[in-house]
Image 1 (cartoon, one colour):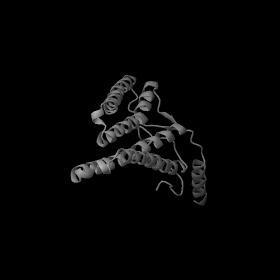
Image 2 (tube, helix red, strand yellow; image 1 turned 90 degrees about the vertical axis):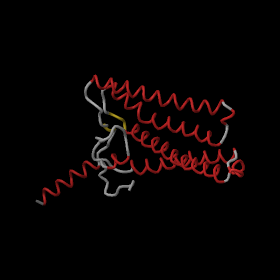
Image 3 (cartoon, one colour; image 1 turned 180 degrees about the horizontal axis):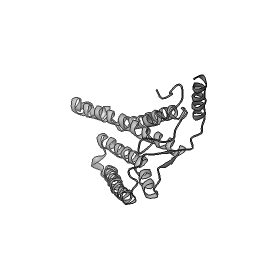
Image 4 (tube, helix red, strand yellow; image 1 turned 180 degrees about the vertical axis):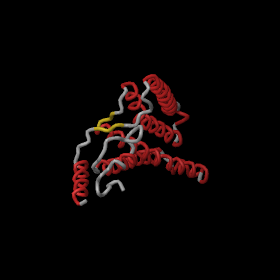
Length: 206
């Protein structure tokens, strides 16, 4: 009995000390025809999202009537939306086309960081946009003074910076753990599913 417990402990330590060079993501399908269909559908979806957001960005930049705080925030929201879908969808499309589940360790780190970065910035910006509407509705006479161009630029900079540090902290906390497995039960690298693979005694992300 003691020998069995010691053997399990040694096995666990060996798994804890193994080096993970990459991860295997969840597959949408193993059928080659459905993989091509998945690629085409996601390509159409991705291009639709990117083109729609580029149109919003272009309209705000080139139409002088839209040079107002609300549309300035909307333009940045469109940029963040492009960033979020670009982190996940292209890799999923490439994997389907190449019939592989693999993503490198550095690729997984980058995917986690940029996803959290764009999502964190997105949440901060939505909060700012709610405040902008509050000022416009409740204090219309002070709106131009409160939401000046300088203030708007400072607010936008703070949302991007907060997203950067939010992504940095969560990414560092996640990959400071040791992993006992490299099989991720998700279609992309997501923190909760990566933490289920951790065999560290203390989970840094928690």
